[in-house]
Image (tube, rainbow, N blue to C red; front, side, top):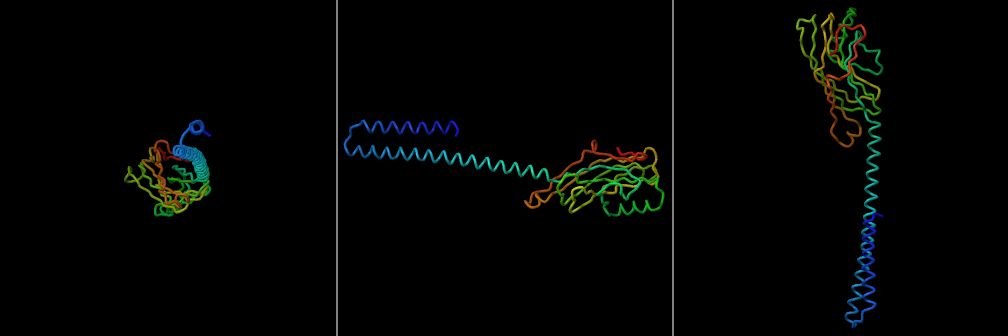
Length: 238
């Protein structure tokens, strides 16, 4: 019990003892004696109320501590089993991406164009992909990827251009990933490069969905994001 509770109880007991002592040694007529008895009863009731108040305070403190402990345990378990999304840009000569376990390409027009270029048999072409992998222990839901890249392709008529790419996935399980086609360099030359300007990941999980909480948004730092060019690649990821 806290010191403040001990002090309050001690003061109440001292007051009660003082009243009893005063009534015991005071000569009074019956009317005043009744008043003294009433005062003593009130004092005893006050002490009882004080004891009850302290018990309620202790119960409240225990309930608060229990609630905090439960919330902390819930947050710990949720963090341990929450999704963890990893973003990176890769350069490859094989758009099938079979070397990366658990990776599924986003089947859009840009990927179909990349596969058509790969099917021509000229394997010096280089393919740029934005990769999002779930390296956590929980499932990500309602994943949305938005990425903006600046590209220099000396073999292209445009040479300097920008692209915006988007992908949406309902569920991304642990150990799984998606690959979003960014561009194809048909004739890679020195000076060709791809630069990430901005990328945003928006995703939820089963806990957030069940509690109707908003999805979480992650902004990728273009300067520090992970880059993985192949060893013999010509196109640089900057």
